[in-house]
Length: 193
Image (cartoon, rainbow, N blue to C red):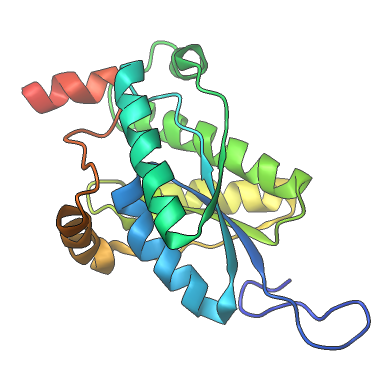
């Protein structure tokens, strides 16, 4: 598949809808990318929730439950991968400060998403992390492009930041849980400073 259009079916007839795996960090950040991907070439979007960085576990469960509720209302299929904070701490090692820590975390989550996408026949992968004006868009686009090349699957580096505020407002109006920090234990401490 090209990242710009749907594939033709093997019989040469009607094109298939591109299958896109969307890494989701939380329900509010999923709103705008899900809408945009569904409009773009009529993509068939599946969510992928893998966030071992979220601390504490109760916070991860709140975000998961909010996503479950959102996904049911939006008829969005979501795959929930294993939660194990040790994965996060093992990967970041001694890198406790951003941007190094954040880059390792983004790569870990995007790599897991890309691998799942390849194994399950998706045409492309992307992430809701690209919607936040608080994240490093350039670094995430670079990581996604590197993984795309390594694994042979398209990465959709869409700049969804212009839709962030509107999605947050919609989440507020719909009563969707909106967290106050990125997710990891270090971001909790940074926020309190």
